[in-house]
Length: 462
Image (cartoon, rainbow, N blue to C red; front, side):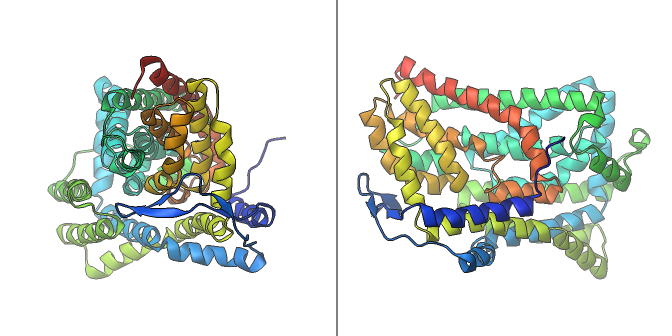
């Protein structure tokens, strides 16, 4: 009998119920905190028991709406971006671009060989340098139809921008949101150790590219092996991608619309790096893009509004999924069990070998990542404990920071991540299918991380 996983909504609500139950079984606990350079940091060794706050049925039912409130920025961002991309799609410029790339892909062996590696490297660089995470969400709407046009599947369309950016984030060498914050807390020079981190990034990105190219080639040979085969067949009919070989080329209007789109992306990257833009500014930027695209594409006001509303409406389920994922964190926080779970994990780090200790740190950070997905938040929570603990077990603080980073390798698959479930809901791919596809890649990441964490102790990396 084939194993059947529940859909994303059932899975997340079941997880909410389990967390609510855990608040009755796990005692409450808390670390003391202090403000250092404006950051709220844990005081090592300050853990103490406090009265627990068991979360009952009422709290369970309130968690989704509280999650909606706390995730309002990302939810609003997703709805606005969805509307903006629907306007972009209405101009038919994206369809024209996809057919042009598909045509080149068919005729040029070089394009076929380079397309996946080039794009994965670009998204991985975004994650490794300016912390690209939520910013990758809109690209799913571009890469799924592109992947379908190239006779791949929706999985490939999701993986190029989403897994690419997430792996870059986890193996970052200049990301201020995880490397920068963690090094500041651990008291090591900012962005020091960049040489080995560059090697880690190269290895992680290469593993991702190799797996994705193997899978893409397999799907081109046997499309029915895709977990999304039937769904993708329907999508291809809707996209009308047949006959792109005879495509006459993009019109001037299409090129102007795409130029606005590229300029929007360049502005977004510049704003994030130079002015620390976040979701509000990026959402506003995409709204401006939608207005400009509508003007250049000569869309009537009624058609513009209808397209925007249709795009936003299609993402309502995505908004609800993000709210449920956020609710899991809220229940743990209000139940006062996050610090207790962190404290309980700490003794498992101790080991006679610094290599084993570093690998244990990575495994613990991977568990913590299931509950706390913010790179900055996780650094602020764990590094005040892990940094001095590293000194005690003979692990360099640089290695402890790397273990914290690599713990985020699980983000592309965990169902408590708002970005992960949001991307999958946006793509219309069930989490169960995605998780089954990601399993061998996650095992490869696990072995890769264990190996990369053994090297620092052997070479004296500090």
